Structure formats: structure tokens, C-alpha cells
Length: 214
Length: 96
Image (cartoon, rainbow over all chains, first blue to last red):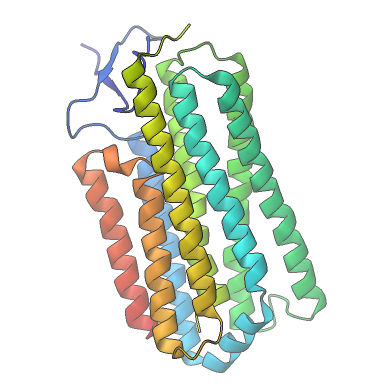
């Protein structure tokens, strides 16, 4: 007997099946957004970044003057602007998930397009920010602060680029979707949305430790 | 074609309001932590502790609201809260 699959408690429609296994409302305490695999990835990624955050403060304790100088070279305005872009993108993704579940394709595509534009704006902003810092002589070899700064923000930027590709794929998928979405597409939508929120969550800590911590 | 009952429309509207409220909270907390990051007579250790508290609280809010963890199985809710608590404790311990 095939394993039952569950719809989100927020689903406003009964989603028909694409491969003959009915989706039923999740029994209390069983539903997870997306698949187990994406959550294994999310916690692995969060743990790796968590160790880097700890490394940052460990190195900061060894050389507080260099880290205070490094933070002073970064623009908190630019960091806050990038934070606002990612938070707004996350809101759009969450609204797109809700709209697609309800079969409202046009608003969902608009939300996804807005998400992608916020993501691209983050990338452009980061490019100009790095350019400004590099031309001021603060490259990755300057000291431990900038080594960690370029490594972690670079790793995060790679996450953003992957998230933008996923969202552009979702935008295309939504264009050919017939309401309501099939379970396979619903899972892909939820997995991709959660990946985007992961990228957002990592940046929230990066912003705090590199731009603000004193 | 999808037909929504008034109850479903109401649920969608309530969920949209929840998401927008979460976004507004996150933006406000961002502004607050930006303010704390500047010199305002607050001691650096206290400012850093407050900034880290706000950052991990924001991650928790992102998980609960945008990632829909508030509706998820209790084990996932516990894992997300646990990651935030452990990371927060570790960072505060090392940083302060």
C-alpha cells in the first residue's frame, strides 16, 4: 500500500494526485513543510554556518582591535539594505506559496518575479560593496576579519545565486501550472521556498556579526 | 478552476496578515539592531549581546512564520527552537 502524503494545514483546496496516491489533510502533529530531505540539508547547512559563526567570535577574541577595525570599514547601511531585500524576498516567497496552493497562478508569478528581483538586487549590491572594499585595500588577505568576511559572505552569495535560479524555475513552472498544483510540484515549491528562507536566516546572523557586533 | 469558500478566503487573508506582520516585525528588529550597532553610550558587550539576541530571535521568527514551522510536526518545531537556542548560547558564551 502506498505511503500516504499530506497536504499543508493551510491548503485551501483538495490537491488532486498526479501519480495515483491521494493527498489527505495531515493528521495532527505529522505534517512538515516540504520533504524530510530538505530539512536534513537545512540543519546541516545551519550547523556548518553555526560553527563558522563561533569561529568568528573565537578569532575576534584573539584580535579584538583588528575585528573592530574591520567592522568599522563595512557600511551598516549597505548591510541593512541587503537584509531588507532578503526579508522582503522571503515575504514574497511565502505569499507565492500560499497563492499557488490556492490555485492563484497570476499573483503567485508576480510574487516570484518580485522575489527574483530582490535576490538580484542583493547580488548587485554585494558586488558594489565588495568592489568598494577591495579598492580601499581590504582584500581577503588583509587580516582574519576580512578572510572570514569574504569566505562567509561569498559562500552565502553562492546560496543566493542558487536560490535565484530555483525561484526563476518556480516562476516558469507556475506559468504552466494548472490549478490546483500536483503534489510533486507542491513539494518542489515548498522545498525551494524553504531553501530561500534558509538563505535569509543565514544572512540575518552574518549581518549581526560582521556589520553590527561591537 | 478553484472555488474558494468564504472560510477558505478568510483563512488565506488571516495567513497573509500573519506573514506581513512577521515581515514588519523582522524589519523593525533589523532597524533596532542597526541602532544598537552604532555608538549610543551602550557598552560594547551589552550591545553585542542585544544584537545577537535580536539576530537569533529573527531566525526563529523566519522559521516559525515564513518556513511554516508553526504548523509543522512538534519534532521539527523543537529542532528549529533547539538550533536557535544552542547557537545563541554558544555565540554569547564565546563573544561576551
